[in-house]
Image (cartoon, rainbow, N blue to C red; front, side, top):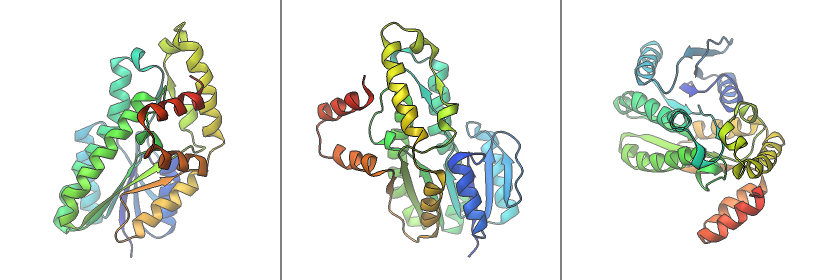
Length: 266
């Protein structure tokens, strides 16, 4: 059965791959992105997820046009690399505003329609960085940890209305995320942090650029869309990263920090 699906951050990477796959399956897909886009099978709408008024307006127009909203995929996100100590208020606001508050804004906008129809599905993009604090990506991890807690609470609150919530926790993928990461100049210039950050950043970028293809995640999200009762969390990563998430559940905090320091050479 055709479903009406909203996907944020649909101009590239996970969002574009997921939108194309779901549209090819016959669903009515609305792709939200900040710049104007055109695609034969995807209904693109310009929207900044950080702007609550814009989000409310766009979601209202989609609901009026399609008659219902069946699925929301909160994919919009970005990354800022650097030392937590040196992050500026503007960098923190941009990171948390895009990744976390963008997710909140969309959820709050679509939930009235889903509650009214007593059905719906929300898929929030977390990360293995939402399960463990990644060095030099601390506020990115913080934004994803926030999505984890928000999604778990939301799943409990809306289940009575026939609404299901699921999270996808990707590991390293080869997308445009690496090239678009904003790296802190203050960190690069700092005599203490700079050398450590550069060494770790080389490892981070190598792992991302050799990561899985976006289509892998798109297929996982498509399966969640088709499931009646999907699991709350699903790690989508290579074997090593999947194992690291499992191992974290049994290690002490100090042990996990030691592993992260060793892996990222910091």
